Structure formats: structure tokens, C-alpha cells
Length: 116
Image 1 (cartoon, rainbow, N blue to C red):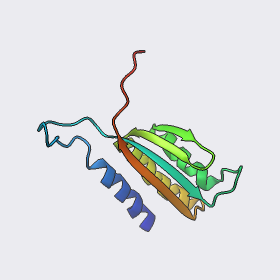
Image 2 (image 1 turned 180 degrees about the vertical axis):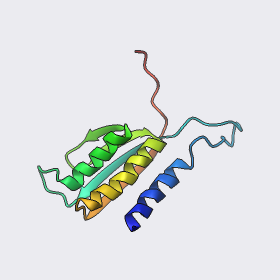
Image 3 (image 1 turned 120 degrees about the vertical axis):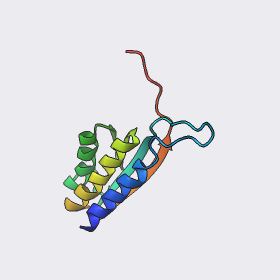
Image 4 (image 1 turned 135 degrees about the vertical axis):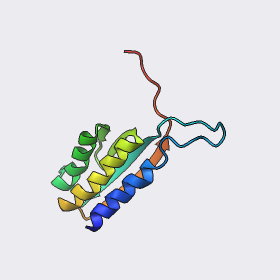
């Protein structure tokens, strides 16, 4: 199915950078951290339909941080987990009736560990 190919392409594109050697130091880098902002359409104010909830469920299943917003959702975490969440979100959102899924992905530094 075409949606599976799109989901796999997202996962493969994001996952390939993980653990590659740094050109400057010649050593392995930390796993990349991604922040993805996503909007699922059709958008109906005040209603999160099943096509919108599909993104949230994919994020929860992948174990990444999810922030539900009024116009879109934010997903962030290790690149591999975010890629899995996005790949599943593409499949699930369209299967649930989405007409468009817009995603902006930003690579960031992982947050500093906190003392418990």
C-alpha cells in the first residue's frame, strides 16, 4: 500500500542519522532528538476526530512525549521513536479519514538529564 511506503520512508529517513560518526571528532554522536509538529485535517474546531486521535495514539504507543494543542500536536523524543510514531500516524490517520497530514520535523539536542 502507498501509505505504508510513505510511513516506511519517514522512518528510514529519520533513522539513518542515528549513531553516525561525527565528521569533526571521528566518533559516534549521541542519538538525535526530534521535535515534530503535526496538523491533521479535516480540522473541526472543538472536535478531535478519530483521524486526529490516530496521531496521539501513535505517539503514545511509541513512548514519546505528546503535547496536544488546539490546532496541532507536538511529538518529541529520540529520533527512532519519533520516526516510528510518525510512520504509524501517517498510516492510521489516513485510514481513519484524514484528508491531509502536515508535519514539520526539527532536529534538536537531547534535553539534559535531570536528577531524580
